[in-house]
Image (cartoon, rainbow, N blue to C red; front, side, top):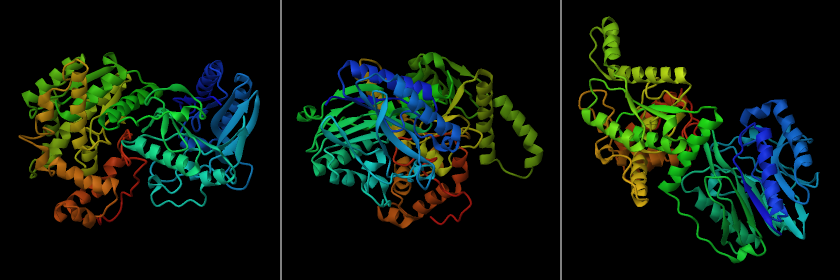
Length: 552
């Protein structure tokens, strides 16, 4: 049997566009003699549709589009399509379903059994799980369809989750001799290895080939990396599709399993490509054609500008220097050097006149009060005002430049540097920002170019430059320490005492965790954060704002 893996970039709600991609893939696959084309989970409507599912017109359009596909798909090839189906049994009114269409008929359907509610997922809010799991007999094979989470039964991905059924085990018990998993599995750094180990275990334990077809592209804060796979019955990787791009690959689970491939390396290169794809798709799918940001001469804005230029091209990126009395000449020259390296112009809007005017207006109301963080925030908010005005006038998307360490501790200003429509590096700790900048320079040199991000930007002590001689470490621990504490707290869910036992100062841990708790209100008002870690701020970490800050 020749199977085509249709790794596609679906746009949520674009039924006609998604249908066209499925038909195009089917025609190409049929032309190559394929018997079966697999598309990702919810390929017809895009993933995740979230509360669009509450609109009856949305679910009706799913069924209508499926009927159009029955008519438009080429004859002779079977096509597995992911879509939202109507549940005719008791429970929720909808199901997450895959149907196989051949010669104008729906010849098999299977709904998703396991509905995740952890991290960014909330599928039980909308869907009724499958009540039965059936084997699909096709061309002499007994195929078990396990949709995305159905293969993740009681894995480390779903920590604390215990599902009532194991779909893959049931399919194997029913005689399945091949498992096919249409998926929409979001990326995070290290997830490719997690997925492969899971598929390898299924293949080895069931003595069956496992075919995995993943979504690719960015939808809001989620980035789907593709990397569709074929794993042999003894757990070897026999095929892997390219990451970060649409692809139509062809496999034969009977003959292809004789090959053996190494899993591609992950790390900073994967993070770079994920963020570039996330920027590009967010901008294009939201209807923007250009972006802009403030370029301070610091490492965070330098990284965001570099990623934006790669994602969109230099003509679509504008950067602005907005110096105040505290801006150093070194920072301004570093910003100019980076702009030159990227081939973009750096425009300057001094904020000093607006800062002076603001202080003059506030002086009568601040009588008897010493200057403090208030005056620092005024500068940040003036910059936010200017950048949002440019956004309004030109229809340009403002990119924020704050990192995860700053968002965690509140080292950012509401309605200032937090202004914008997309947080590009809000899921990177500061030490990861440094690592990614170094990787970008090393990659450029390896490819015969020069360093892109000036070394002076990477090597100088981080500073917001909102007061005289300010350094980040005036208010925060060294980033190696801070990010270590945050890693244990945010990604491993450890308490203050557990973190202290890992080697950190107990008092310092308490102070940092208290900052995290007190600044939840800021993060609730932040733009979407591109997710590249197992737990990003936003939908993947939902904490109450009004609560006792007990972590200290």
